[in-house]
Length: 292
View 1: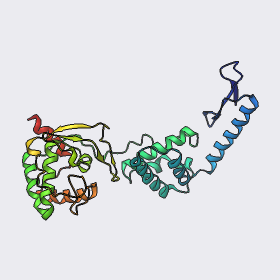
View 2: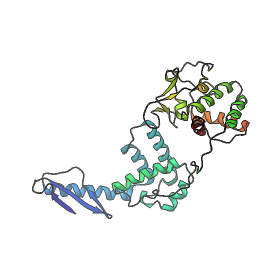
View 3: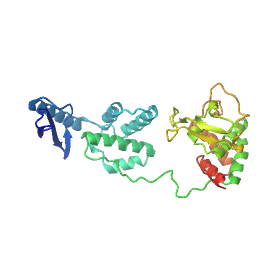
View 4: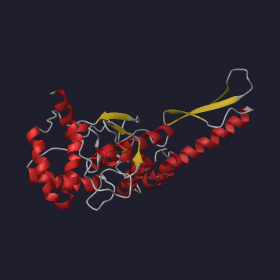
């Protein structure tokens, strides 16, 4: 326990103490008297001790979402979904008793985005003194998405994909235009989903927004508006059906695009074309064609 004046001789008192090997500064100071600083320290220490013994995984996950709320709505939804999955798995377990092996075993069974959120949550708990270590840090989980070598679709692959859009029936022409537009602009998937008619110029496209995984609209990945040249092969929007909303591309039912409905159509087209590639690889196709 340490109570002292800061700056020295100022007559104002602050306090700090060690709890489980970590220095804790008592919040709320400085105080006018040494006694006030000592009393604040005692109350704060008792509160930390009580939280350590009473806090479960479920209770802290709920409190964390409120006390450490993120400003972006999409981030709030992502964190809430991850916290619910964590609470379902570890609910009554004391927060400090989740072992590293248990954390890694569970992390292997959920999307990497979930385990990353739990790593953030435990760091906040550790900084508060509720836990001594973070069981989700440096788990060295195997990558599920990154590739060592990027192989963009060839021109033959591209043509096969365009021809295969007939498998979608009446929705085929719109999806074909979507492939052409993405392949020759290099626009990201979320940006494509959020593209509006006001963004389409005569010779360029302005990217102002992106649709997030939870369906909300936010800024592009780098947070900045940018323009993309609208090359002749990408000028395929004239025959798209006009919808009552401002978006350029839509789902088969005329709704704004989201990852799920788009992915269903993309899987059918890939299977019909006999081409195994990701939608994201159309960006690499674009870069390759521009270089050539």
